[in-house]
Length: 146
Image (cartoon, rainbow, N blue to C red; front, side, top):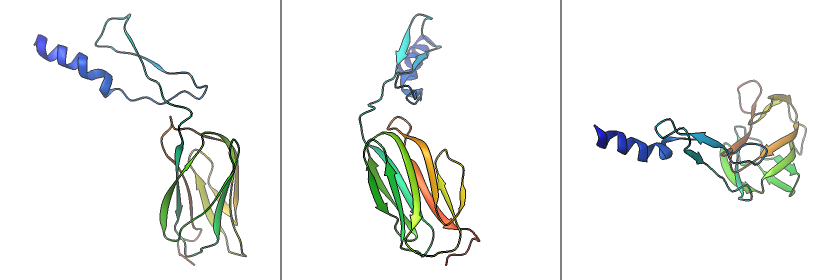
C-alpha cells in the first residue's frame, strides 16, 4: 500500500493540468497528496509563439484575417479546410473580412461572441501560448456553402 501511495505522489504533478494566468504570473497548485507546505509551480513561456487555427467552411477564397497588436499579421483562409499559423502572443484587434460582396456568414473566434454578417471585428483578444491553440472560423449563415 505504501508503494501505491508513493507512486501516486510521484505521478500527481504530471496529472495536474493548468494554464498560465492572464497577468503572466505562474499558477501555484497545492498537491493534495503532499504536505500542506509543498507546492508545485507551473510555468509557461509567455514569449513563445502561439498557434492560431484558421477554418473556412465555405467555397469563398477571398476571406482574410488581420491581427493588429504586438505584431501585425494578415492571413488568407483556405477553402473547406483549416491551417495553423504561429503568431506572437499578446493583445490583438482581430478583423475577419472578405474582398467582395458576399452574403452574410457566421464568424467566430475563441472566447468571443459569434458574429453574423459580412465581416467581424474583435478587440482585446488575448493570444497566449499558455492558453493552448485558439481558432477563427467562417461558415455560411444558412448552413449551405455558396
